Length: 321
Ligand code: SF4
Image 1: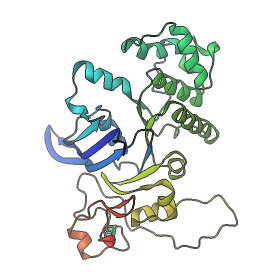
Image 2: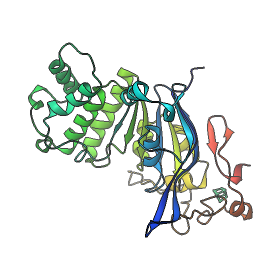
Image 3: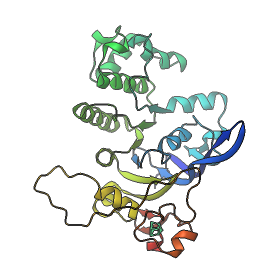
Image 4: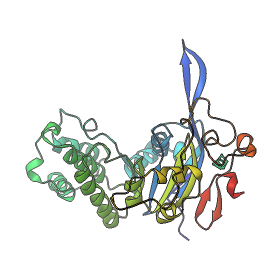
């Protein structure tokens, strides 16, 4: 069996909460997360705002230092890389940010924006201009856009340019952090289809972060669901939607609107109680227990482990122990 490209091992990231320079608490942004991503796979990460998805993506690119735990890329811990090895990792692992309006320097032309990673990483190409025109064509733009500035483009075109900048380095692994959430629905579809086509052409591996379940389903081979810093379910995309196991996943899916006026729900909608707890003082035991309609005494005291309950199905819930 092929070895995974990335292994996340018991990763933890706490941010201090300070008042008058004194640490009074910690935000448990990512709290003991483990999973693997195979080469060529799209691994989806869903969860509500503040569940730790973006922090996890940034830890996996070494844009943040973890409190503890490790990320192993191609068999090496990314936190041990230095010098030339770290620079090579920076070339291989890239990110597309959520907001295309702020991720491009407004003072640079598109040619300069796309030249920058090539220059920084000293990519040897016979004709840089021709290479950049090809990159633009790959994302549906053209030579006529070369010397324009970011403000001359729509949101969808800006995101295409941001993706072309990533493609310039031919990365193996890309974190797509809500890459279409700032775009209109019709433009979203174009960008998502383009990302899929690029993956099949260049064998990219993606971590696809989103709070939009239908978008994640469309893009991902497997999906992990996050809740207050923890992964509570991992499943192949179709299985998660046809048979969600964790009560929180069931709740998320039952709230998903169905675009069919004749549709009537055959299953009962699971309504959670209360609000998402604070990541500064998460509840003891299962973090979902104050909201879970199936909570029992054990759930308040004992934290459920993420474990395999069926082939390829991992769930952290006492209902399955
Ligand atoms: Fe609900 Fe208990 Fe399962 Fe948590 S462990 S999701 S509280 S049943």
